[in-house]
Image (cartoon, rainbow, N blue to C red; front, side, top):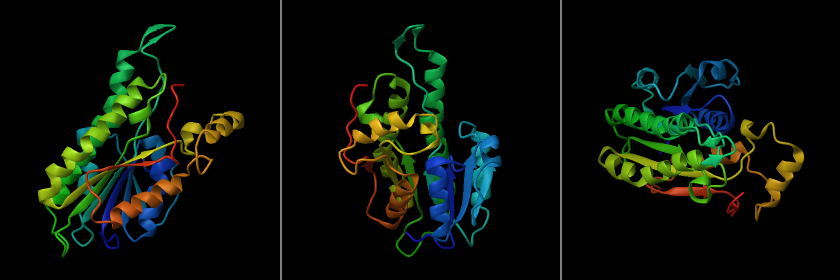
Length: 253
């Protein structure tokens, strides 16, 4: 699918994977709406072709407003959605202070899984109403899981459950949307240099990198963005999860 003269939505677009993806998709010729929380949008990098739209992905009303803005120009139809918004707090099922905070578990699932589905579903409705390209395609949705969906570590019960839900969503969503010419793919990154790692010491970062078989380093957000572009471009990729992890398989802790 071609990006020039189209519109794309990138959630979590003000930092990390989302910011790198928004910049890459814009550089490929698309108009990009980067959705993020208001405070994040205020500090988002200035990139040609990228507009920041304050949006909480757990709010149906806000998501509908953002999708409406993204699909308001028939000359540049909404074709691409990349879901990068997410949170990753850590807590054990049974910790020193007792049972895992149940409200925290719900919040993680609400943001990571329900938020991704909300954006996917509402955007798909708008994309399905657009005219297809000569190959019958209308769009592609790329969701972000994590290798924690498969190799969840100690303290990752909520995060792994939410990301495992995204992996499980991929194929049925692709089958549901096939009749509308919309593909659905998921990328499961390994350990990536994002703001989540900003507070980790160099020693810890070196230890994390040493666990990656090859290349023995942390992934870069730009590499995630590069894979997103490849997925968009490759019309026969559909209904699958791609691990981007340097062959890393996470240990229990």
